[in-house]
Length: 359
Ligand code: SF4
Image (cartoon, rainbow, N blue to C red):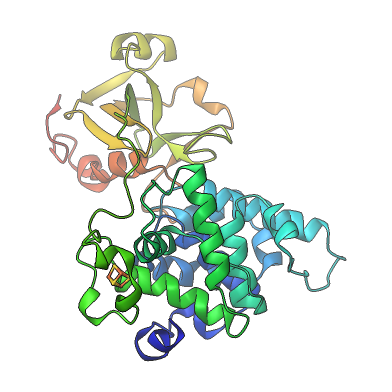
């Protein structure tokens, strides 16, 4: 694997050229669930703004989530921020913040599991500690012919043993990057490059023609669907009303137009909020899918003559997409705001930037 890495592996990624524990940590958290090519620009913006633990801890959560907007799985950004604050709180004031270098200390921080801790320890501290991300699971399942779904506990335990067995005392950081990279670019999910594989002679999946079947998929479960209405209020200056989510949940701390259960219809919403509506639009509903459920969103754009008094509360904000204010937006919020060409609509009140817009 090391020989393969020396010849074919990616070694010029931004977190590889300057291997500090902080940069490895940020990159590993971003790489959970997200591909390298997507992560690179987010990583560069993030460490450009927050170059070390202390600057991240000093930031407002909104700034962090703003830089995370579009990357998804926002709990990762919230956990990074919370962990940075924990590290700074435990450090002497104004000194460099020591970064934990044990499995126990790292996994005690929010958002760092055993695999992410293994990546930090091996890459940043050269300790022979294994990792087991999705790419590594795929390689090990195929190489050892493991047929159980990796999400099952017994399979995962077996995979950790293999991972531990393979991690070398010499160059553990390079090995970690090698096997992750090998899984991502060579032993790919579909069409693995077995012909040019450096371990093909010992690969159980190849010997049995099972490369495409492994790793085994977990039993399929239908995702439930939830229906909501999204009310996009637009004031006479073109600012949109956003509401901040509670700290927990998939979009905890993010901002989005007011979302209510589907049975809250427009008429009762307008009456309850005492809104003076100048005009409205109702584009077609759309679906936003999460790992565990679908969200069916029915949008309602409401141009109001005055800001409703209920929105004076601090969990509300009036937001103009182009004014440079840095806040984290949920995926649905970005989609709803993108559907609204504010300048056109404000300059030309009869304009039709939104499909289905009605007077
Ligand atoms: S032979 Fe194919 S399936 Fe086996 S490890 Fe190599 S690339 Fe993966």
